[in-house]
Length: 500
Image 1 (tube, helix red, strand yellow):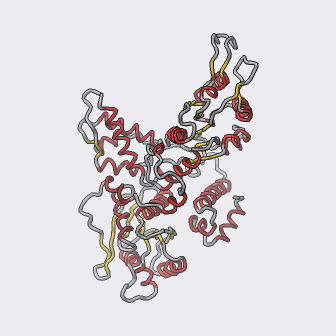
Image 2 (cartoon, rainbow, N blue to C red):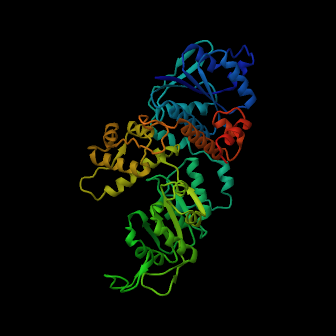
Image 3 (cartoon, rainbow, N blue to C red):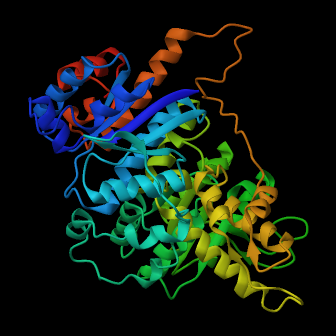
């Protein structure tokens, strides 16, 4: 087990490093002198020069590895930002060490809001010991005499996001078409903002995301918020149509076009005229179908099988895929010209595990829906979820996303005998899945050998790109995210690993 201390750096720590006798060595240093830790993860919202000086000073007191995380806040009392910053750091720690950790969160440094978030996280998503430091009494485990349950979180995390409000200036303050997309996380706020921006337009949209993230739900919201809302919304699962029937299903056919065609039939493109055609599992289209679809999108007209004249259509296209189409293009499995034809506006739906603060909210909405649907079933008892069950659900990563969460709740509601879904009910209803990913860098079989330099290249490329995206192109901030000392070093790594 790896022992890790996680803490914000407070002003008392900074003053202590500058020789303040009143503050002694400060809360963090006092903790690492009193207890042994393999790693100390510190989060700083303070000036970089002060922070760097403090880290250098602190290192002289311990042999523990010190990992610094810069997280700039608009306010040290903004619960939403503090929660998001802390969960990112803790997720980073788990990704590096796995979940077999002995974690301690330090309550003393920082603001009361920071301490409150540590308590919430320790009692829900990231179980941990809570410690406090006192100049005279030393370091003690904090006594929290009640178990903070998941239902206490929502009101704390609804703080305004000024940046998003400025970005959304000019939008209607209410967007009823998007209210059923339950969320409070900043990452989903940005998704909804983008969707609102493009909804009134007629440009094609590509929605990317893992299975179960709600791609069709978002597509329907975009349709309802657009100028075609009174027209039809036609969903089509491209992966479920046999290749031999693809053309007739999408484009239609005339009477007598083939054996069994006893009457004329409109295809999906014509059926969606004046509305929206939602092409789900877009990445599953076979190559011949991609060629035909490209021509239809270019010409804005379809030719039914057996027809001599094409038919114009006025349909907005929204496509969705759980595949990475750029990778599919590189593997020659998807046409590049079709990709650029459809990917005018691209929205990436995040998986549930990356939507900090959303799991509890989505859970409440789903259990309410299950209760409403169960009202007409004989003997159904309205269900509520126990605090222990909620906390377990907050710790689980949900590889199947919202769909898996919904199915789990449905099973638990059916199997629980009383009106409360207990911790044991949720455990029995869960189906833990270890997803094997083809591009996983850590789980590849080594019996036949691995290309370590190639894996190192992929790992570096992945996180360099991710850091640049998260830092909005700012190399100084990106360097901090990946633990590099400066933007010059970050630039050299980009050149080395051919990241543009």
